[in-house]
Image 1 (cartoon, one colour):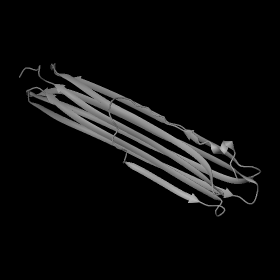
Image 2 (cartoon, rainbow, N blue to C red):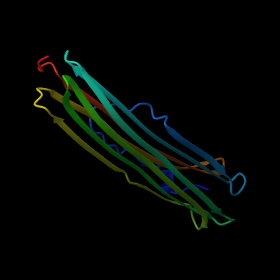
Image 3 (cartoon, rainbow, N blue to C red):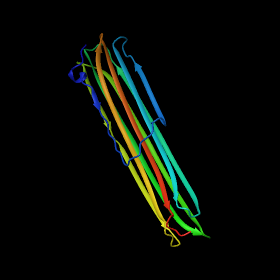
Image 4 (cartoon, rainbow, N blue to C red):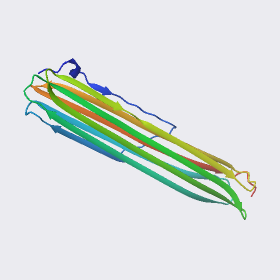
Length: 241
């Protein structure tokens, strides 16, 4: 039994990514699911292999620097909310008999989503000759991946393959910075935020004939990551001691 030309071609969908900023995403070992399964409908005749791998990751860094010899007190209130979720589903159905061929249908959906929100408020004031620097920073990362796969094999007059892999990515980044210098202080405040939001997708379907055994291999891979670095520099060198 020889699969037709449609079945001999791999159905492969490649990489989609979005990057913002200059930060680098660390190794994506935050959460990883790897599912592999094989099923045989008719012994020695059909072999179905499914491999789903999903990776999520997020990394947040925060730093504060004070320049100058003026006595200063720094009050930092940082809140980081990170949420990562992976939802994988695979269903395989095979109903074959002694007909002349097989109809193989593969349908897959891959949907990584990344939402990131960063808010930084900086207030510089003076209290009895002491410079007070108050920093309120909030970072929210929501990284989700949905991966669904259906494989159906039915009897048909001839061998055929229908493979459809739908890939959708959704990313959203929101930055909000507010700086207030009070008491007529000659202070400079620099808030530097570097962010990177990245998604990547790969889907492949391969059908081969090997020693009268039809092998169907489906590989799905999804990656989603959010990285954010917040740096606050307060220059007090121009304030009279």
